[in-house]
Amino acid sequence: MVDISFNPDSVVVAIYGKLKKVAIFLVAKERIPAYLATIAGMVAVRGLPPIHEELTMMVAFCTLFVLLAKTSLLRGAWLGFLFGCGHFSLSFSWLITSIHTYGGFPLPVAVLALLLFSMAMAIYPAIFGALLPRLAPRPEMVPIAAPALWVVTEWLRVHIFTGFAWNLSGYGWNTREAILQIADLGGIYLLSWLMLFPAAVLSLLWVRRRITKKVFIGLGVIATVLGFAHLYGTIRIGSNHEANKNTRWSAPLRVAMVQGNVAQDQKWDPDFRGEGFFRYLDLSHSISEPVDLVVWPETAVAFFLQASPRAMEQISKLSQHLGAQILTGAPMADKNEFGKWAFFNSAVILDESKNFNRRYDKHHLVPFGEYIPFRDYIPANISKLTAGTSDFTPGPSANPLPWNQGNIGLLICYEVIFPEEVRKLAKTGVRWLVNITNDAWFGEAAKPQHLAMARIRAIENHLPMIRVANTGISAAFDQFGHELGRIPPNKMGVLTVEIPRAHSKSLFSKAGDVWIWFWLYLSVAALIPRLLRKMFKAKHSELVTK
Image (cartoon, rainbow, N blue to C red):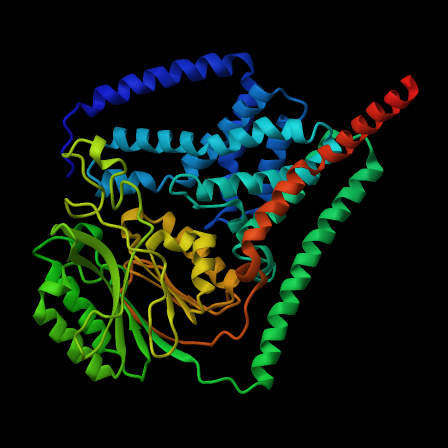
């Protein structure tokens, strides 16, 4: 439980009262558009995992675009903000589980934290709502500007402050394996554009709904764009199958994924830590076929291995028994240059040598989950949501983890949701991506969403992805995002998969940082003809006066 020195109920009531007054004041003037924008944002969530209703998401965004047509800057910002509040309050609803159930905060405080966080994230749709009517003053310009501008705001959400890349709109294509392949060209952002482009065309058809001929043209454009995306993916997947048939590739990597399903409320209990550790040992001893690597999830070892020779001896014996190395998550502690202890959320590859030379320290930590931002200005009695009283220290950078079968791109927990960070790691020459995580403290809703993000990282970088989670969902994907096997959520289990060795690099991994300039250009491209006309008229009038 978290000890807090103020009365949470009074704080919640006071903030709620102020928010209610502001909302009533703002909504009263234009009640119907405000309600529609909020509902559209909430409905758009149905397009994301695990529901995957792509058409529903497109209709929701189409509603937003129609509401923003020919509106003022402030009104557009307000409608975009309401859309974002509705969208993110449902999309991030699993935060209540993290904050209340496992963080120890009262339920009203958890709900308020979700609402405030959703409002902070809604700033990006507010920017979109304010700018779109300026960048696309005519409905015909919306299909050019709107999808690209939305992608720009998603890119900002990924990068500003520590960034939060959860549930970008492109993840709505998660069940369409062929369409997903365009991620190797433009990453998740191209998938987001593909989700919003049909919505933008539909909004144009609605605004110009009296022109029957253009309705068929618009629907034809949508079908053509989606058809090309599907065709590209089909060819990519087909060419991979042919290459594997006609080429003698080296033997695939054999990986055993171990899912212990240790409950979050037991994981860090001092009386249960040993039992959790031995659960992973016992499950791993049940592996009966030869493997190259055994992967345990994030903090599968819920204590400091450096201070436990007995645990290291057990892992050493397991490695000798299996003839394979063990990759596991575990907390680590080192003394810094000032002689003080620094704590890390780490991953290590262990064998009979019992050393920690092959170690990766998580560098992109979760604010409030693994550390408290601006710690010097925050009361000491407020601690992070995860176990332990001390904040974790970030590792140096996303460095590859050396391994004799090829360097591993190690990603701990939500590091896998950041496209550019994984792309930079892929460019170091890693052969495999491994994501170890503990999604137990997120709740059930987040598990399929987190899995979908890991899958896209594999496609973006043409690298196999091995993902092992404490309570699931553990799964492996090849470089085309094809699922090779999974362990269902909330089950104990061991799954051995054969991971094909990747043999190419993607356009996104090579030049992914160029795309943002393309999206920025498309966002303002609709203005260029108007600016040119103004320049031409000004020059013409100047010549006339002469």
